[in-house]
Amino acid sequence: MSYFCNNFLVIMIQNFLAHDEIIMVLIRCGLIASILATLYCYLMKPTRKKHVYLVDFACYKPHNPACMCTKESFLKLTKSTGKYRDESLDFTRKILERSGIGEKTYLPECIMKTPSNTCLAEARNETESVVIGAIDELLLKTKVKKEEIGIIVTNCSLFNSIPSLSSMIVNHYKLSHNVLTYNLSGMGCSAGLISVDLARQLLQVHPNSYALVISTENINSGSYFGNNRSMLVSNCLFRVGGAAILLSNRISDSLRSKYYLKHIVRTHKGSQDNCYNSILQKEDDNGDTGVALSKDIMSSAGEALNANISTLAKNVLPLIEQLKFLTNLVARNLFKKKVIKAYAPNFMLAFEHFCIHTGGKAVQDQMQKVLKLSDWHMEPSRMTLYRYGNTSSSSVWYELAYCEAKGRVKKGHRIWQIAFGSGFKCNSAVWYALQTIDPVKEKNPWTDEIHEFPVNVTNH
Image (tube, rainbow, N blue to C red):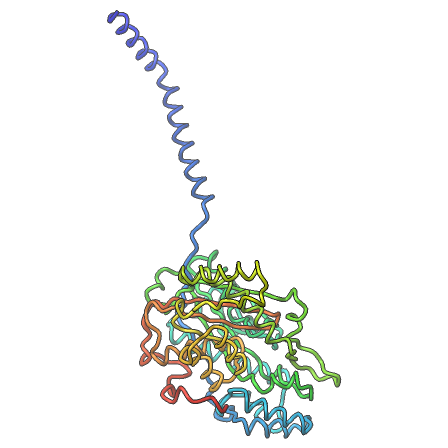
């Protein structure tokens, strides 16, 4: 029996060796199939999102003292035009008194002159001064060469020039022909965070790149010379300002960048007519163009805010706060909403700093109430409104600059920027501090006067 088995094994080995070429082919095919399967799994696996770093940012501060505007000088300028009725002037004074704006905000030089000149050329000069001023300071701070910038995103609601603002930047700095440029207009005070989001998405598909984001507004183009009260409010609140932000997806920038972007949440309530029409550029009965604020603006802001924080909450709140929020939401859906009050999550457990758009004192008061924030947390927003007025989409950057100038930003801190705008939109950005910011080394619009703040704005 053993003899038979031995012969059988010998025969099998001989046959195996006789067909070694076939065996090798099969082995090679198996190896190739394994490699292809591995490659397929790698390619089909969702790619890991790249970190988007905020290298640094710069906010524009006019150096011309002729551009500084007190409330009294604003009233004199308004009256000197001869276009406003006495009741409109009285209304303007009341709005200024309740606005939360201080005595050192800025208007374009062309408006500060008597008579004012609001032509297209002056509007272009205003925007160029702000945009180029902010970019020059940013390039100086970051030591990034202009040739390294691969993406440009600009936003300005009311001034939509031809060529665009992004093209103006390319021309001024003589940038490369293959730079990617985008220009957003008509998107309101929340457009700055929309620009950041667009840049973020572009950085996901363009490796080793720098993205330059510019947020500003044009006061010249937004000036209203009629007597419709709903359109006079914008004249009182908006002031000159702008910010330049440098974003990067380069791993090498992780060591020197100030922040990285953790979350962007965008909410758009434009499908509802009352929200869509709450901020509207139009002509009044006499043909004068301006931006009208409807009586629905606060309720529209509330709806957009609720939707936005409902999405944001699950990403940033501690688990216990999420459970409280979810339980309340379910209960309000099962029972009458009027019976059960909405639960306001404690966002002070999720963030160390809040940069809330400077829409006006009434907006700030409501935001503080809804989010249950302390006066300390509201300070950057209130002081920015007081010192610089409503600078539209760039206001959240003046607020972050305030936090830095005060020496409040430490490594590991979380910052929530939240802005509202026409549409109606509410957008949030969450940043994580990669380093402790030394205010002594910082150069920003607050540096020379931060010791004067905070001030009491109760009577402003």
